[in-house]
Image (cartoon, rainbow, N blue to C red; front, side, top):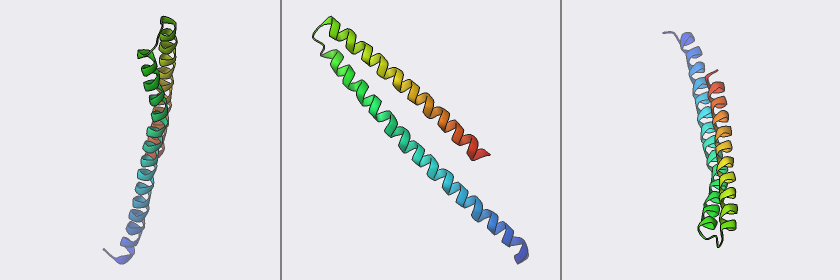
Length: 95
């Protein structure tokens, strides 16, 4: 092949390589953000579970169970939001 034919291929390869690095970097950042976002509510759930096991009365146990249920619902909602964001990133990356 002549040098003229290789030059456009070289430019295309450099562009594709840069895009792949950008997408990989975005995926790494998303993963780090997702882990951080999940850590807080999961820690809260763990504390609520500890409170449940140490509840001195039935009323305290019911309150702890209610708070635990709310924490689980928040985690489910957050996981759903992260899944939607991840799917959106995948669609944009494939566009």
